[in-house]
Structure formats: C-alpha cells, structure tokens
Length: 297
Image (cartoon, rainbow, N blue to C red; front, side, top):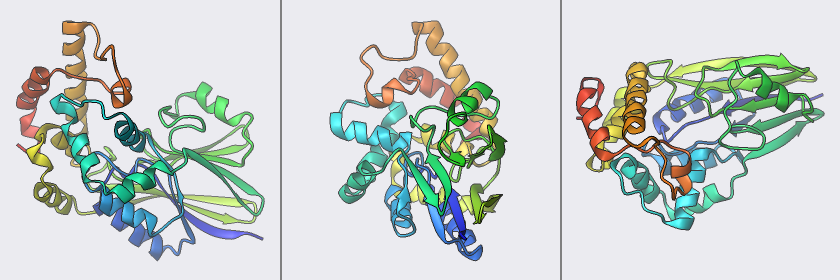
C-alpha cells in the first residue's frame, strides 16, 4: 500500500528567499517528494539561485508561462523596447546558459501514478500554461474534471489563495503562490499531499519568510538600474500593497484604451501576445502618482 508525502510548490517567480523557507518547512514535515508547478523564475531577479534549489530538490518540475516567455524570447530575439519589460530582459540575461536550456526541457503537465492513485499536475490547465482556473469558474472546472483520467488535478498560475474541493469525484487543488502571493506580507504558500492507500489528505501551508532580506537582495543585484517601477509593483504584491498594484494596472489600462483603443501591438510576438503594453509616458506618470507605495524610488 502506497504511503507518501508530497510537497507541491507553484509560482515561485524567482523568489529564492521564499523558496528556501518552504524547503525547510517541507523537510521538517518529512516529505518524500517535491513537485514544482512552473513559473519558477521571472518577476524577482534570482532565477539562477531559484533554479539551483529546484534542480537539487526534484525531478518533477513543470514549465509555466513565465518560462515560456523567456524561451520564446530566446528563440525570436524580438525587441522589448518599452520600459515595462526592461526587468524581464534583465532576468533573461541573468540566467545561465545551462539554466536557460534546462527550462526548455520542462513539460507543461505531467501525470504521476502512485500505486493506483493518479494525479495530473499542470501549471495553468492540462492543455495550456496560460489558462487560469479560478474556483468560481464552474464551467471550466467541470470541463477539466468530467472526463479526467486521474484522481486529482493540481495546478497553480492564478495567484488565488489556495483552495481544494471535489468535483465530479475528482480532487481539485489550486496550489496557490509561493513567491508573489498578494494575500500575505512575507507569506509563501505550498501544499502538502499525504497519500495513504486510497486516502489523500491535503494540508494547505503558509510559511513566513524575510521580505527585508529579499528587498536588500533586489537593491544589490543591479535590476533597479533598468527600471524601478516594475520591481516596485512586484514588491507591492508581497508587502501589503496588492490593491495599489491592481489600481496602477487598472488605471494604466484605462488610459491606454482611451488613447489608442487597445493595449496590444498589431505585430505582437511572445510576451506581447499575453501582456498589456503601456506607453512609457503613462507608465512613468503613474509611477509618480503611486510612488508612496513603492519600495524602490
């Protein structure tokens, strides 16, 4: 009879400080295995450090949309010529060649069987790193569970608080966000899955980490020379100013639509196909408006 304890970690986003604390907690909980659900890098500029921790702790690792963006950029080398994406280009350049090649090898989903207990792990959905499965989207949850050839579907990507429920006799778990969860100040989410025969016990865990350590690492790494705005907005997601971060992007969207009627480029490639693009003057004007909430000015 299978008896195994699994730590499931989603959406680290380069926050190696948070990941170290999760790994300590997982060790203290005597986990047998770790599964990573993608978005390992990007948003915080510690990709190499994060990936070394990941590679040294697990062979079950998924690709997220953040890895996909870097892979697409590496293949196409299109221009990220607006201020908004200077940070992402910094993070691309920071990655070692070995780690860049490593993320290219990662699958978008995996199905694992533990002596008859089948689990499908994904980043966003079983068929896309971009699709977000929110708990209130009942049609989408039903779509992915009604014919699911597994006992459980586990994913991340949404940055919603962790949640679990049974739908169509399938266990569904959103594993939350390890690195940039807007619901805590210095809190990192992960899931402990304890399988004992056919019984699956789910423990939704939150561990604390030192955001001052993370703040200091950011100051020292050189990314703020590229653009302080995006880094400050990212930090807002973990220091209690998530609402202000949301308001910044909502207002930027409104201004872009008023000016241009859209926020996507007609010749969009890669990351530009997914993200809202804001003109530099709008970006900088809003940075001045919201600067009281920014850690890096």
